[in-house]
Length: 242
Image (cartoon, rainbow, N blue to C red; front, side, top):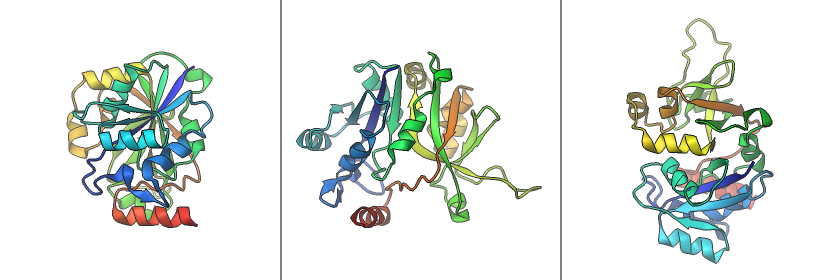
């Protein structure tokens, strides 16, 4: 099975413009993400998909394979789909470009096992247990609910399910490493956002609304940090220096 890792990288972040090129200990953030991704066993290759000439030039400077994509894509999934039209593979893994501390083991966890290696409209998303109650209340952390087959049944920015009759419950959050079959990517770009996706502002909810299988795989000791703000960037710099 050929698996391609794709790192979407764009300049237009609302809270931290130019995020992929922010300096971290002498290297741009996207370099750190790529450095972690190429260590993952099972990836045939790793590509950076960007809509910005500035990022593309930096990738060439550091000899990182990059694809210059359209700047009209509304989501990272659309950007992956464009890559899939040029680079054939049986599975594509989206590795968010704002996770410079991402562990290769997390990426490896999303690579399909033998019993899932089949064509069709489905995907895999990494999740990790929420241990700090503050994280459960943070709308930036997407909470994931799944059935006994580990297929996602809903995801929300609010803590779900509500602990009305029981407190013995583990909450899980979305991790920015998601795998898709080519058919899953094709479905997404040909479909329209549902009401829940628009209300929650969560791209992946489209698969739930259209009843497409999104398997969830748990990763432990996650330890990464999504860089969304200057405060996050400062913390990542501190950790890498250490």
